[in-house]
Length: 276
Image 1 (cartoon, rainbow, N blue to C red):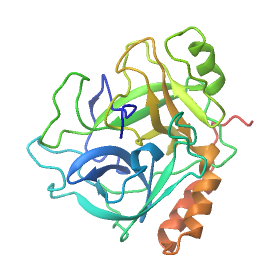
Image 2 (cartoon, rainbow, N blue to C red):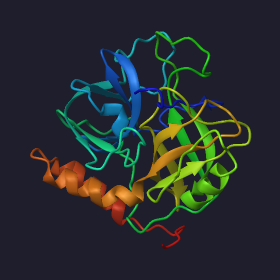
Image 3 (cartoon, helix red, strand yellow):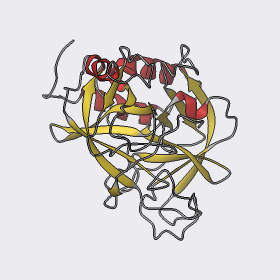
């Protein structure tokens, strides 16, 4: 995923089956990035995770293992080849603007207690500042840890969302990161340094709103790992949801059942909203 890939710092093991939409994007059985299942043949991730990639598989349904199971060999897991990547047409690999992409699977996955799509917000949805949300992912627990050969337990960490305006206020105080957070992005700041780092870019940022789990962000970039003074930045899903629907509908092998699930999620009422 490159130097700006992220993974979770300061997390805890996630309860079994809690995050059934979480998937791993892999090359030769090696974890590259995270992603989220949004329909039976579609995964949403960060553009920099798949930029330049030709062959990838999606691994899902095996979030909790004993640590001795090799990637892709868990009994509960499924492995599906990716047949196409759709990267946002305005993605900038230098600044990571519009850092969003879709991966189309070779065949639909069967939903179960371990494999389910996450709901997406309507385009008018704006998550409030300080809303408690969760990021999830695999791999090392600390930046200095050696890479694991076995499959670790999926990790989770609670964060508080900040709107992009607040993100920029904080960045003005930090002269080490010359970055502007524009519309279409949100961020988080954790005083204890609990945050993402290398290995889990593309993973979902989800919030429970009105008893529904909604994906509000896609992990994109950060500077440093587990450092209190830095932010991490996510693509705001509601800003890009029209793009997601349009690209799915234009795909030559559209999975109509999975697409219906996505639409139904978008139509669910959300009461904790602020309008633009």
